[in-house]
Length: 163
Image 1 (cartoon, rainbow, N blue to C red):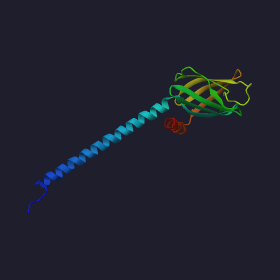
Image 2: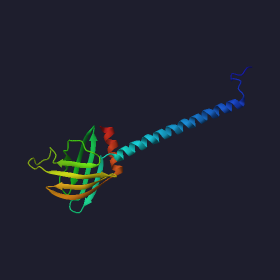
Image 3: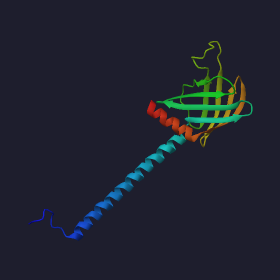
């Protein structure tokens, strides 16, 4: 009776299996390094961008919270502080990363139509924080807005997947 298996020397079969196993390990390592590299580039890009969730406590304004995000190429955002209403970003021009000059105003859907309010945020973006002043009614209030990295990433990912 003849065997259906090819006549291979047992050592050749072991060497063939070892080379396939070695190739699988090399391909797995390459895939893992590629995923780690892409993830690192994405995280560094996210951290270097102005968008995110910022907050600070100012002695004169109380809790200040700033939310900046992008819809395509357009920068949008909200500003909350003291016990005032939400102010939305009305700056329409492009914003440079280092120099921040953002203008916020009352939302269009604000219940009290006759009340207009304008607040400017002027400062510098450095190391994931915005150092500057909030100018409300001509009075400057110094603020040091620090980014909440975890919440910023969660919000960024949720905006990517929800549109």
